[in-house]
Image 1 (cartoon, one colour):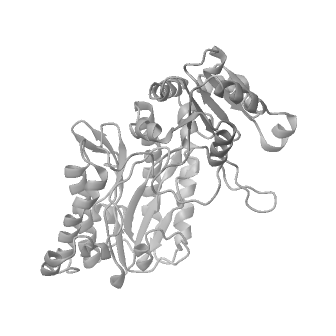
Image 2 (spheres, rainbow, N blue to C red):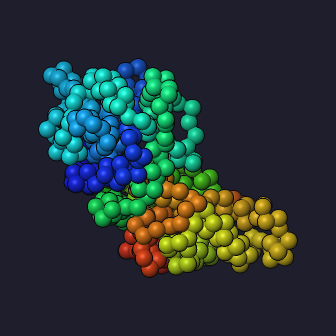
Image 3 (cartoon, rainbow, N blue to C red):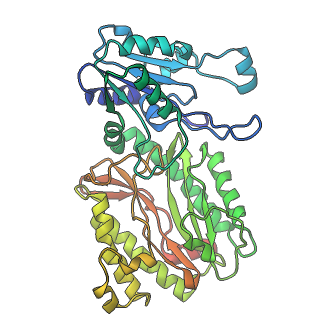
Length: 430
């Protein structure tokens, strides 16, 4: 690992919180993510299942966890299963957790090799009344891959069909959405690395470079500062490419007079930053670019001041915020007030210029656990990212920062990042 591990007390407390939400007589079973084959004998880069990581801190494949707080057998109340290493594995793939190291990381006392999972889980399940199982229930998830979590659910339900089953995901979504102080500090480290990367590219960007040159500068800064790498596939979109929301080809030249939209983030200790800025390739915004940029900046500041605070329902905020986007589109000459007044509320006209939401939860996942129809609470971390995209003019602008919800509103965790057009120009031309 490139990062400093979080303290075991954090994971001990997380497991206590989860177990307190389980029904009496219940067992919960979790597993790590698959190693996904690529081609030949290669695998895609591996990342731990975020729920298992939040419960244990174990950042390693082929891991299982059993939580059974009411077990009559004390040895089955908390069991962690890890991959048994040997000299061959160490020679080819490097160090794996020892029993002692897994205990020091997770705070779990009963740690056994994962070849014992079948026998342990059967013994434990037969003592339980209910079984909590976990799947990726993020409402934007869309996958046809039968994941390790999915296969485990099918296997357990086939072996124990007359137990009562419950979903672990709703409990974890609520718990994980409220960030603990150590998580906020870790997120701040990811954000601080992103700030270094942002300043690096402001000094670097100029006409004649390629988008992928900027991508290379970002990854250099992330890895140099002990980040795991990109939090997600970065969007380095110049000119009209910025109007494609998830443009990731990053293979076009940076041209004189174009804007460059950079949507990026650093993964530090598996926690993610997420920032978007729009940068004039030649170091100077045109009058129209500045006009659109300032409109988006007004929306950004309005969302932080009026919407990102306790008690607000995220999905309702997205619906209500459309009227402000409409107002800015009218000021920019993109829409007519009389047309907006007559529009079908189910098909608002501003959607031509902004189709995405304004905020999402952030943490161990870039689109982190959180429930869209429940109220925001202190301790949640979200993005704020309004945008306006004018395909006909080759202008796509999104301004994104990460914010912490507090009792009195929110704190912009990226408040020190240059955001005004004159600030950006001054750094680029210094």
